[in-house]
Length: 197
Length: 65
Length: 183
Image (cartoon, rainbow over all chains, first blue to last red; front, side):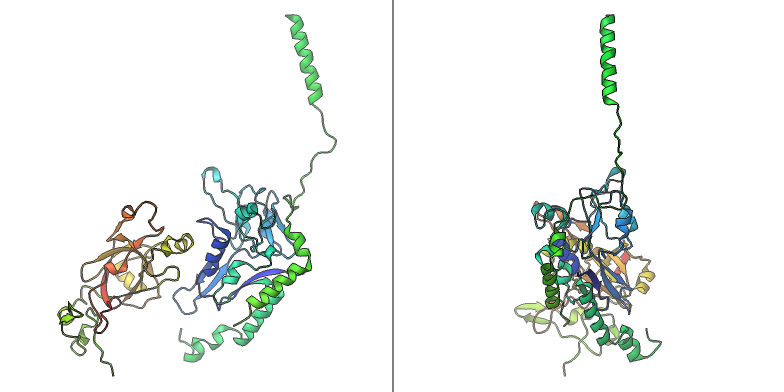
C-alpha cells in the first residue's frame, strides 16, 4: 500500500512559486489563505535556499491529536484530511502544527475564524468524490482521478515531489548520489578556497 | 376558581412526571475517534488499480531530467 | 573591437573624457537626438546611485494583465526598490519604509524600500512591471469601473532618463542614476 509523501528538494527549488499558483488555481483558494507557500532562507546571500511548504501529512498528525471535535482522519495511504462540516474553527490545529498548514479564511469578532482549510494532497474531503459540493468545500480531488497533486506536477525544476514515499525516496537518493552528497562539496568554497563566503 | 387551580396543578404534575425521566445509557464521548462522514476515496484507494495508476503517473511525470 | 562609450548619466564621470558618447544628431530616424549635450553635465554628485530595473517572476511586461490575476497579485503586492544595507544605512532607511526615488530629469516615484544584500553597494534595482501610481498618487480612480488591476504601483520609468541607442533608437533605461530619500 503506497504511503503518499511530499518532498521538496531545497537544492533545486528556485522560488518560482509555480506550486503556490498551481494550488491556488486548482483548488480556488481564496485571497489570504495559503495552502502552500515558498520560504526562502538567506535571501540575497550565498547559500540562499528556498523550500516549498504545505501540509506534510504527518504520520502522527498533531492537528488530529488536538482537535476537540475529532474532525481529522487519515486515509489508508497516509493522507491527513478533515471534515469541514464538523470543524468549529477553534484554531487548535493551527497552534499544534509545526508547519503552519491549517489556514483560516475569516478574522472576525470573538475569534471567529471560519472553517479550517489546508492542503489536502489534492484528495478532496469526505464528500462524494469529484462532485461540485466537494470541489467548493475542499478543492480538486485529483487523487480520485489518478493524478498527483497540482503543485508537484507543476514544479518547474522537479524540486517538489509528491507520490508514493518509496518512489520519492528513490529519486531523491539518485539525486544526492549524483550531486556527491552535500551541495557545498562542489560549491563556491571548493572552487575558491576556504575563507571565501 | 379553586377547581381550575386544582386541574392546572394536576396537569403540571402529569407533565412533570411524564417529562422528567432518565435514560439508562448516557452518550459517551470517545476521544480521538473520527466523527465525520465517510470518505468515498477510501474505497477507491483500497483497490490496487488506483495505486498502480498513481505510481505510474509519478514514474512518468517525476522522471529526473 | 566595439568602442565603449559611457552612458549619458554615469556614476563614473571620470571615465567620460576617456570614453565619450556620440555627438548630438540633428536627424536620427528623422528625430533630433541628444547625446554629448547631456553627458556634458555631471549628475553623479546629486544622483549617486546607479539605477537598474528588471523582471519579477510573478509579473510580465507592463503588468496590466498579470497584476490583475488574483493569484499572482497576492504573491507580489507592492512596488519596491532593492537597496544595499550600506546605502540604506547612509540614508537612514529601514526595510519596509516608504522612500522617494528621484531621477536626474526630475521624475520622482514613491516606493517601499527593501534593504537586501541582493544588490551591491551603489546600485539599486526596481521591477518594471508596475503602473497605476504617478509620483506618489494612486490613480485607481482614473480607471474605468472594475478595470483597475488588483495591484498598482509606481512605474519605474517615471524616474528614468532620456537616452537612445545609436543604431536602434532603443531607450537607455537601464543605465541611469538616481537618489533615494526617506519619504
